[in-house]
Length: 311
Ligand SMILES: [Mn+2]
Image (cartoon, rainbow, N blue to C red; front, top):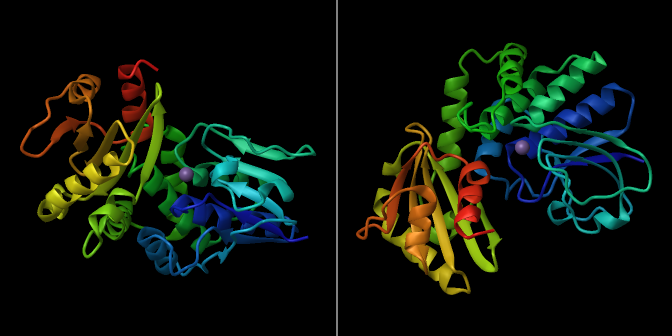
């Protein structure tokens, strides 16, 4: 049966291009595999759409229900991020760079999970181990994913392996300037024009349980804070609205990728607790504070908040 290779729900560039990459590798090894994604092309995020276009890659086909199918998972291993009915699918491979999730299998399978910044980095090693040449267009996709996931090497999740993979993949993909590629992706990703404030808050948003308190945190990665200068009030009101829906705290990270820091918008029942967590002072006029060096929700915001909430 055809192996459907898919990334997580609400797919990002790594999920999309890693599905293409692993399907390509499996095909080269004589297996019947095809790239899938949990999105239609029309609903795909703007950054990934630009990457597919730029490198002439065919968009993976939409897969929302994997009942009865044979699947390979890339960039996740959590049931909560899988297509519907993953329990009724046969998972045959997992390639990832996140914590190991809760997907289980009946048979031993190939699992390759490494603590690196991107699935593309793991895949690059797998192609080399298998002695399979990476097609130019596929290399372009994997390269884009690494730049995206590591925020152009600036994320604390970035490792030397990711940098080494970029150096190799850019040559295969024929990309002379990765800075330019990154800025093209960033502009597509951070475009806020015409998007309602609440949609922007939810663009990359997660809820957390912090010692019994519900805490939401959204992140907008921007090329410059000027991009949101005119809609700061709308964003704050959207955060207030979301907080009013049973949350103790809602944070919105307005991350300036070039300056390497975050203007953190805070709506909370306990502002002092949030100030303490990040060592800053909330400006009453904007309900926000600048936190130098803050780039990653996973590695910086969540751990410090958990500590402050006494988790
Ligand atoms: Mn990833």
